[in-house]
Length: 172
Image 1 (cartoon, rainbow, N blue to C red):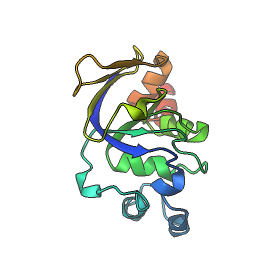
Image 2 (image 1 turned 120 degrees about the vertical axis):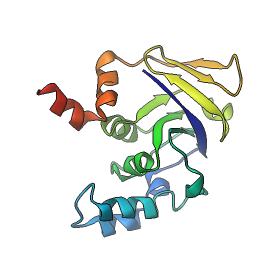
Image 3 (image 1 turned 90 degrees about the horizontal axis):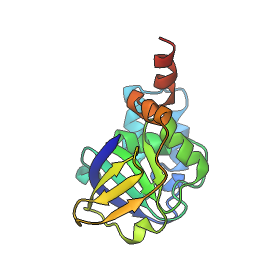
Image 4 (image 1 turned 180 degrees about the vertical axis):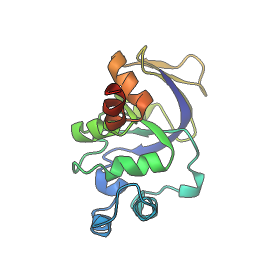
């Protein structure tokens, strides 16, 4: 399973509050998940505390982060913000375990590659082969990093769009 996309480099210690601020959570009370109002709040407040120009976000982008990516809380809003902004996956030096699990559960790949944030910049184009455990920078021929390949069941879960869809599909 391969993904290709332009990089958005977020830096190190990007916690869930930077991706989706805690004050916006209060606005989510009594709003149906997936509704237009729900998505509007995610889009409006997502990345609010980061220096990201939302209009520059394109389809099929890959977030690159440093150490501690996604630390802070167990709420999945931070990953939902990434999905709504057309992010297909996350590559970071290290990823907080709960954020890592939320990403996979919601259909985004998340891989750890030590010190990758030092060698990748915003605008680089990455190709990530999850089955082979290989990451290459298409803007720098010959650049390749390895990571543990994902098991086939996890690839199937991504193809379904996340854990819930995977479980529903497996019941058919």
